[in-house]
Image 1 (cartoon, rainbow, N blue to C red):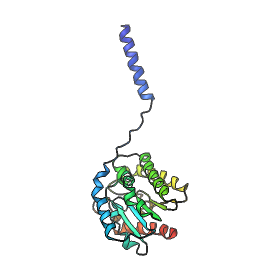
Image 2 (image 1 turned 90 degrees about the horizontal axis):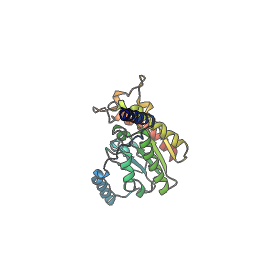
Image 3 (image 1 turned 180 degrees about the horizontal axis):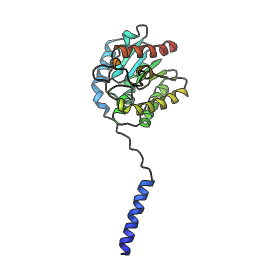
Length: 229
């Protein structure tokens, strides 16, 4: 009987400890960046055949960058578009030399974090990767201006919008503390009076943007680029 009582007491104690001690939140794993080796090879082939502008503005990030006809939208800007669709911030960090640093850009326009959130990464994990990106860029060239585009709302990922808002808040607070970092809010103008994403800004998949969506991005981000240039 005594042993049974002691066993039950031990079980209760262990149960109480399990509930009293918070568990460390496991970080979602980074996807394998090797899936973009072909994209990096394509960038290298383009560079070998074309002259790369000096003091360029480099656009980098996920599919929202890829689908943005940046050369047409910013005809007076010497730029390179180095977006690769489906990328996480961790992927851009892995390929930062190939997509950003080798060009010694004056300005970098960065959009990522959308796919990260959808994959289950926490706001803190995404922010740490964004911070690492900024530090790598500024370590390479301290005068570079880094323009962080806020994570956008979308119809297909509306369920994880609160997590995206949390990431945006962390990123905005961070950029406010550094003169070379700039936060651009594209999210607010993409929300309607009901506080939800404006349907006309998205193509059928509810994630990628129509020309109207890019009109907003071009206007809001263009204002920042005009000031920096």
